[in-house]
Structures are given as structure tokens and as C-alpha cells.
Amino acid sequence: MTDTTVNPREHHDRLLQEWEHDTYKSKHKPSEPTACPVCGAVFQDGRWQWNVPSADASQAPCPACQRVHDKVPAGFLSLGGAFFSAHKEEIMNLIRHVEQREKSAHPLKRIMEMEPGEDGMLITFTDPHLARGVGEALHDAYKGDLDFAYQAEERILRVSWKR
Image 1 (tube, helix red, strand yellow):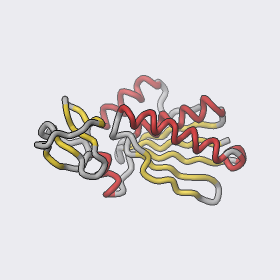
Image 2 (cartoon, one colour):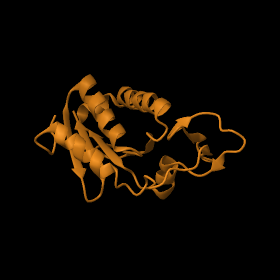
Image 3 (cartoon, one colour):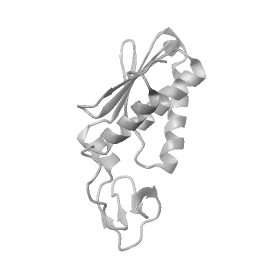
């Protein structure tokens, strides 16, 4: 597993620091409660969560639904290799499981699209931390080559896993 920085702790801090400048992270918190009319997530107690909105809840799309609508991912995961081709269904089940686990606690962490290609697959995410977490889960389960590339100027994370 390789990383684009020397110290993983510095990379983590930089990722969070850059993420604060994300155009999809509102500078002002929505009024509470606010319900997303697309996915049903509710902004309450200072964060987006899965909850039943009250009757007086405002309506506004959550940042994840806005990303999906605008087709602007925060993370990319490229999958490839002979092992991926031979075990595609099993690997995709692991990826979906990681997403479901994360999304159940954090509504803004979602898979946007899964695009098959000739040599593998490209998966896009609404959250760079989810892209990294899925890549690390693949590496933990199947080993292989895992690479991270954070483009500060684009504020996105590109993850590549191959075996």
C-alpha cells in the first residue's frame, strides 16, 4: 500500500483541512430541522442523520444529494486486475457492505455510480473518506496494490486497487 505523502498522519490532517473548503459543505448550517426531499436525511442536532422529520421541518437537499445531482464526486475508486475479474461479485458485495455500514451512521457517505470498464470498474463517492475506507477494506480482505492520490487543487481523493 502506498500513499502520496510521507507521513500518513500529515495526509489525514491535510485531507480534513482541504475538505473544510469543499464547495458542497455549506458555510452556514441549515436551520433545524431540515429534511432532504430526495433521500429523507434530516439535519438535526448539528448534523445530517437518518431520522423522521418533524412536520415543521424545512426542505433542502443534503450535500450528498446535491453532489449526485451535479455529478461531482468527492472520491474515486478504480478497480482492476485478473483477481478482480475472477472475484467481481464477491468484491462488489464487500464494497456495498462497507457503504451500507457507513451510510447507516453517516447519510452523506454514499456511492454515486459504478461504471464498468474493459479492465475493471470505476466507482465514485460523495465522500473521500468513504473512498479511502472501501480501498482499505479491499486491501485488508484481499491484499493487492492500493494507492491513494489526493489532488488538493480539485479537493478529491483518487484511490486505486488492483490485484
